[in-house]
Image 1 (tube, rainbow, N blue to C red):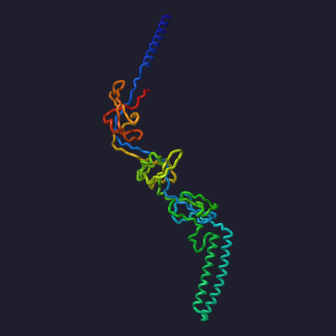
Image 2 (tube, rainbow, N blue to C red):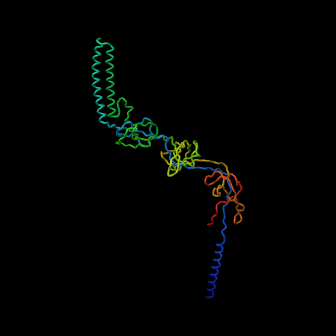
Image 3 (cartoon, rainbow, N blue to C red):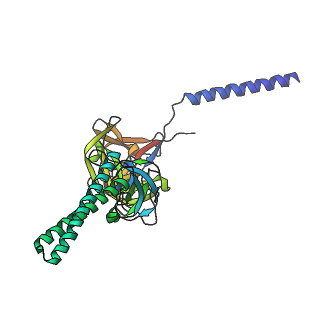
Length: 367
């Protein structure tokens, strides 16, 4: 029994020893590298660039008051549509005391003058009817009375404007009623009832009551690198992708390329603008982020190969042309080629390779 056990152990040891030698022998042999074989194909190749930016209304108007005061009422809110002339808010005037006193004093003086001229006119009228004075003297008295009456009315209007910001004679042109100047959508109303506002003048932009824009006329604003701006021209078609709308795509046309650059983080960029064609069924909010895909160059029905198969040596380009793909190792010969447009994945072949040739592709990795 012991002899059988000893024989079995010797047999197992011999098998393990032979297996180890076989494994080491196979590992010591050089591995045969196998490559994919790729055939050139005719296709359309495009060189594209992506510009990032935002979709915005072409024109956004800031509504500002013509008088200073306190907001007493706000009639509109963001998102509402308005027409030119619609009242957005009402401003209550807080008069300056010196100006108010001067206006009241002017009214008092005008009332005194008008009272005097009215009495003079009444006397002149009676004398004219009696034939005591001439018509010329009567008309002169009448003119002075009318002039004093108009001055009183102007003084009262001025007092109302100083005190209330509006006069009864020009209520339709009131500066206290802040009106829209264009048709469009209200994008923002940054003021609330009780806020103080400053009028717009030569020395101050004034407080913004509302911002309004035509949301039917949208443009894309973005920036592009200086290395690609030379290939752009006005009128180029653009594809806009808006991520907030589940990657919705819209057509656009390039209409502006900035003549002056800006520098951001050491990169020289140029601003571009494109008119966007957005269907009426889609609502695009102002400020949506978007990517603009611009086709810089295009070649149709040209012979192409994967760019990964091209070898670069100095200014020359080569491919490994297949001589024998069946035997192991495979046989290749280096062939110079002339390349054209590339999209980063495929590259145009102008000469050196023809349809029906086969070239070496990527290495096949054994798993």
